[in-house]
Amino acid sequence: MSSIKNPTRDRILSATWQLLETEGAAAVRMSDIAKAAKISRQALYLHFPNRAELLVATVRYLDEAHDVEARLAPSRQAADARTRLAEWVGAWGGYIGEIYGVARALMAMRDTDAEARAAWDDRMQAVRHGCAAAVRALATEGLLRPDLTEEEATDLLWTLLSVPSWEQLCITQGWSAERYVGVMQSTAERLLIGHAQ
Amino acid sequence: MSSIKNPTRDRILSATWQLLETEGAAAVRMSDIAKAAKISRQALYLHFPNRAELLVATVRYLDEAHDVEARLAPSRQAADARTRLAEWVGAWGGYIGEIYGVARALMAMRDTDAEARAAWDDRMQAVRHGCAAAVRALATEGLLRPDLTEEEATDLLWTLLSVPSWEQLCITQGWSAERYVGVMQSTAERLLIGHAQ
DNA sequence: CTCTTTATTGACACGGTGTAAAGTTGACAT
DNA sequence: ATGTCAACTTTACACCGTGTCAATAAAGAG
Image (tube, rainbow over all chains, first blue to last red; front, side, top):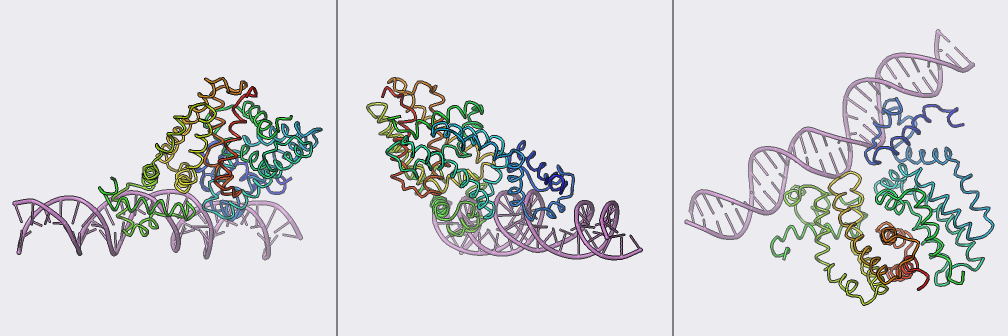
């Protein structure tokens, strides 16, 4: 739909995405993006006021392209808390790999650009909500590890599933996506579920 | 010792440290550091060839000032693997808070500066070795969770104890240092020790 | 045919890093 | 006293990437 309405904007976004995914994030300049989208650097500023907003728009574009909602549905519909947790870890954990390039660029901008920071924090809060929901489900089934508050458990799961953690395991240490998700699922269980099981 | 040999160099390093600890890392420019050290911006370049090397030197300076070796000794001398793990998590986890400012600045430079990247990676590998040693101790006492290889367990512990994870919990979520260390110790146990306990 | 939108080219300001050159200051040796 | 050396200062500038501005071109819609 957005692709029909405004083809160049779309071309820009997909070029941005592609560049961020392949090059190292910091190396991608506005001029690189313009070149890849086959417009002048200045034309970029006709569509996006600055780099930060372009990155934010790219994230939204990716969400749309990957149909995030559909991915998260199984987690919400899970019968019991345990499978809900596993589904959630699988869904989000698997998604990180696909947005990593853009995520990385946005994270790097946090330090210098308030808007980028806000956008990133907002998205991460959404992830935290997902974690909170999974923890809540565990708590209502009485499965939650007793020495943690729900808050703490949420923070812990959220941190385990953070992008930097994913980066460390999958990029630095070369874990495969399957291995990552598998280990994270068992780890999350261990981490959160009280030993009464 | 370094303080006796070269007072201005020392003043620069301590100014850098102080600024990075108080201001947000990215906001600290070379000129700010110069001003804080009461020398001209150019004199900075008489002591350090560029920003990256200044940051790296600051990290070393901090290590010396905080006597890292002494902090890590209890972990290495621990009687059993379990207390070794707890000591290690406590020592490193507690240390992060004191170097966070500099660490943050160095991490931010990774994207643009190869030298900064190398320096940071080197330090993180040292941390990973600490994790590996703790895991190894667990393994030789037969305590290691059986569904993980030693490699995987090391990576997992290392990621749990990473600076970004610390940041998310202690800065973003406002955990106190004690709470962080306490939760991390019990979490690490849960994460790594097989249920034969 | 003209208005509007989208794009182009070229130029420039700003901020931060790093370089270069010439001059100042103080300590110390002879 | 003089000369020398090192640390430091001031001033200036090059480079890069972001973002702004103005003048102009092309193309479709009314």
